[in-house]
Length: 403
Image (tube, rainbow, N blue to C red; front, side, top):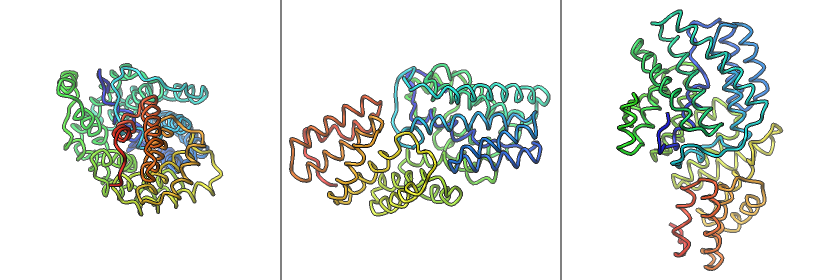
């Protein structure tokens, strides 16, 4: 899961989407029921209820690694939420660092994650020792080890430290498919890793192959699509994965179809409307983007639950960009003031300054535009957002014109 330099563009969210909801063919029925309900709560951003039901699932079947892994997964999702790192934009760019500087996670959530991932690993390994040729036993190990690898990379920022666990997760996932070709849910794990390897430069791909990772973008994407179409407890995870991959591939209509289904399934997850608006904007569908963002902002206004870290700036920054694209500069100004005034990550503020630069150019104020584009590049680079920086840089010396 890690090479030097590494393509973190898909690496970081891989296991976020693929281990949230594990397969559980042999689980205690009551544990399985509670676990399914817990994940439904989690994917609707109802984290307190999710923890309650997942703890009950673990009590219903103390030998089931899936429930312990579920508790670790929810802790990790909460860390990402509190960090404001739960959107596709976070993962469309790439880095070449061996390790990534990240804010320390909340101590209580980090402790909770480590406690439950250790228990899940112990239970999964015991299941595999008892049933060495059982596909689900291998799946439990793959999902558990994969989750730990993802946590190491995304929360601790230790990309290289995640390598061994990622390799084990990939191997176990392939074993599941070898033992039971009908397990399309396990193909999600293997498919995502294959996709990642395909993004690497030729020398790195060769290193990946030597280390035991398979590649192939088309086959990897196909395996994830098959998992998304396969009725299982991990089907929603595959849909979340496809939103990211389709955005990367420029298949925006396909991404929007997945998002529409996820909105239907998880109507309390307001961030799905943020993602739908951002995807429509990338597709050049300004009116659709504004419609999605307006609907999401209405949900946000009526939602009394905690907000994602610096969430307001994301919403208004996206709607500002949409309104600039629609040439509604006065409306864009209103959103821009909110986006810049709100507490935000540097890359979010950087992209807001890029929109401010566009507005200035469209109003024929070149000096102000140049200064704003320069500030945008500085802020995006400061927060490891090469896509944002690259999008703003050309307009420093050339006046922006609406496409």
